[in-house]
Amino acid sequence: MRRFLRIAGVAFAALALLAAAGAGWAYHLYRAPGPLAAPAQLVIPRGGTEAIAAALDRAGVIRDPRLFGLASLATRGEGPIRAAEFVFPAGASMAQVLDILRHARPVQRRLTIPEGLAARQIAALFNRAEGLTGDLPSFAEGAVLPETYAYHWGDARAALLRRAESAMEAALAEAWAGRAEGLPLTSPREALVLASIVERETAVPEERPRVAAVFINRLRAGMALQSDPTVAYAAADGAPLDRPLSRADLERDHPFNTYRVKGLPPAPIASPGLAALRAVTRPARTEDLFFVADGSGGHAFARTLEEHNRNVARWREIERRRAGGL
Image 1 (cartoon, helix red, strand yellow):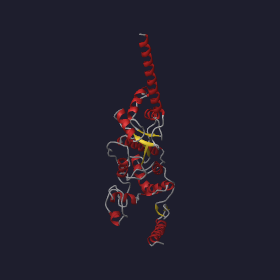
Image 2: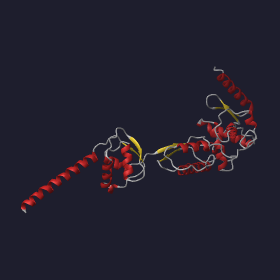
Image 3: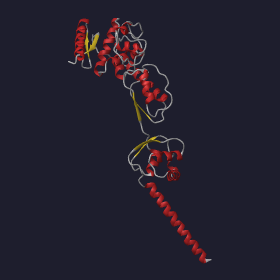
Image 4: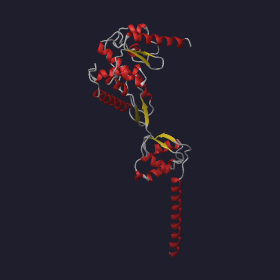
């Protein structure tokens, strides 16, 4: 009996040593550097530990999906594993990988909407944005504030669009609340329409208040706005116009043709930025009624038609020289 107990004791000790050795080896693998040769950005799918382990294995982040499953089970008290997009450093150990999946911030993506785009151009940006999901609801021209919007992989296009629309509502309200007295604008909607024209007329930030002043002065005087971008919007039915304006475009009877129809067009022609909204609600103090390109990317302004005609003649001479390669 004593001999049996001695043998059993030796066997138990041997098993304990083997178990300890196995546990030590597993812990070594858990903490050892992983196979990832360079930092990697990876979308972790939904579907449970097995699907996540398979994705990590395919991307070369881990060596053994089965060991990953056991490790995630053994450490489940540290929190759930999340399906999102993460960045994994080169050589990330299994312990680091699990910590990232549980506690790291997901990758933040960005969608930038430049100033002056029409609704269909903005819709194309949303539809091309990698990682957004779902259909994009229709939205009105000028309803979206040009800005850079952060999102995560898997976010809905509809939710991001609502954020951009809310941002425009807030920006328009802020600009309207700080408007100058005596403007010939009766509502925030009219300010939005005019701001969209100013946005399309100039890409020079410091010019916006002065361009806005020209249109404000023309509205006060009962003059037609005569804005080429409104005519281009009508000619291309809201799309970018891929040709110069023609005389037929300028003579076309259309609600957006501000050469033929006095006052503001019936709707925005693009999405203006906050600077353009502020420009039309707080325009420069000037008596200018005209402006034309000056050949440097900006514009030459004038108070009288005679002065404007001289500026136009200079611009046409610049165009002639450019066409002739001079």
